[in-house]
Image (tube, rainbow, N blue to C red; front, side, top):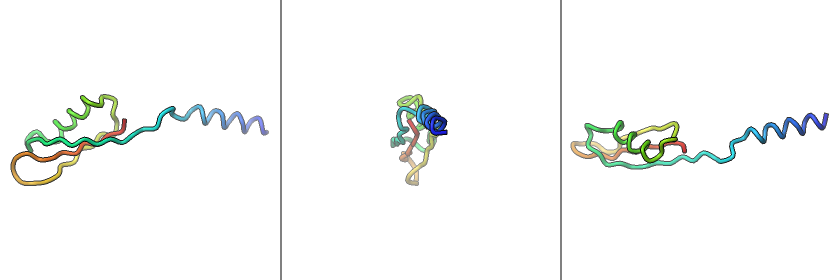
Length: 73
């Protein structure tokens, strides 16, 4: 029984990822008409393997706005 528990623990430890995922954010100042699609594209050029990529817009009014793109690398 003890051997079975040790084997199960060894399998669980070996299945764990070797490195922890890191959340990273970048800010891009772009014109409103290009928006999140362009900001996300720039982010993915810098971090091509990023997952769970999200984009939010800060500010209002006309002209350039700040877009925050966050992803897991």
